[in-house]
Length: 144
Image (cartoon, rainbow, N blue to C red):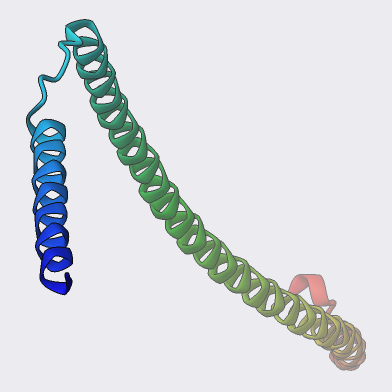
């Protein structure tokens, strides 16, 4: 009996394997229903996605270009700021030099005023001496 059970089990196993193979064959090779409209819709959607992706890439390139332009503008502004600071430093130095020159001119002007006052006093003294000399000789300063 042991032999009969083994034979039945082999037959049952073979039938099971054949059934599984038939089912697998049916599953793999069954006719797929034609969903033409669905495939067309999917194709249209994929085309739309592709178009949107290209549009997004163009937008990204445009944004990148804008960022590059902004970076160049910031660099130019930075350079302009440095140039303006340099010019402001030059103006400040010039103002310091002008203030120093004005101070020197005021000092020279004060010295000149003192020299003029001294010169006027000497002229007056010389005129007085000349008049005294002319009085001694009997001639006037205007008849000389």
